[in-house]
Image (cartoon, rainbow, N blue to C red; front, side, top):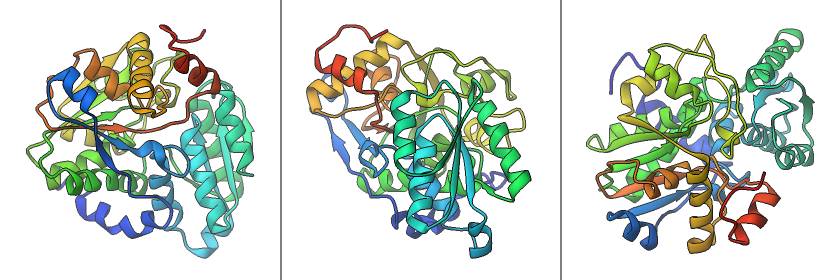
Length: 329
């Protein structure tokens, strides 16, 4: 592990007990059908079965449970494309801490309903996650709340890294770990853990073609900004921040490759896992499967794909169950 990186395997191990109080240890399940299709052993790391339907509960637990009583009493605030906000609201409610979630008008209605059901204060406004973060930061300044950043926070990254530790324990011979890529909190944490425990393994990030900000930033060598575009992988939308502190550097150092997939490839992957495994994955959670099915990866096996979330919209699930060849418009 490079000593100059902001998060280490020791940081990940230090938060495991904290995360375990809220999140579950998810199984790494072999998939014979996908393995046959791509010609190597493939397993799915089912973060889709977490209490809030996505991996985000790990990072939220790591950050929020670290707060002292006085800080917690002032409440926590975050910005989200849906899944992170749901995780923050869930963890905060379990600990009796006030929570506010700032979302843009782009967040799908099903995810907004799920947030309202958790009883958090919900602020809807703006047209991007960047707008949501600006609103959250204003609440930090005005009310002394603690920002639970969606990705660019050491405690959040360490919490997501517990996924990588579990992969190393469940599949110690892993050759490639395929991870959805957005702001980089997930892949940074997973890469820190996997490279420490299985240093021979490759870590590959997958994002959608539409508005893949981290991929563009990696190519440029510095944070860039892109407009958010409509995509099935809505949970991967949003920028990395022009003042990105941690995730770009960790991703640059530890991630071996990044590939992009089309909307049709994402849809085909969502349909594949539903029909063959009776598993619902949202678009952002299915991009790793999409990359494998589309032949976009040169991935030494065994391969573990992080199936990061299940929070697809009802209309999408209905269309998938009906074997629709293309996503609903």
